[in-house]
Length: 192
Image (cartoon, rainbow, N blue to C red; front, top):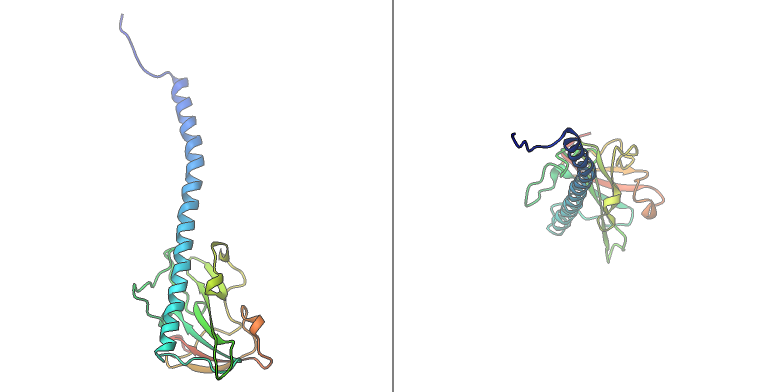
């Protein structure tokens, strides 16, 4: 008589069920880990853009806002990063009409105090609405944002040398809103 060793059908089904349960638990956790890693990377990239604009204003590449009713908006397509990140961590490209750094002066003409804000939207529909770079968290990154990040500007368009326009209201800067609107200088490769 031969000694046959092997698994019965019930044992194989039990192993398959156990593996399916483990995969059902593991896949969402791994997906969540990857998404959180990408969100953290997006936060880091947003802060790099702000830091780059901060240096460019110090180096007088872009004009600094003088009065408290002035805003300088720099589209991400003009900002040079050391690592040259032209894609988002979610493998989307930055949408230039929605992705920019805004700088305002909350001080006076004589003693300026610059505040930096960033808005980002990529082609994969991940969005950071206009907010201070210090306030960005994982929860502030949303997908399929219906509000968008437009600054109530028809579009964030201007010129590489800076184009002047008056903007009535900028979503995200309401607490700093001047009475007669913003005197904006917009730096962008996207012309109006």
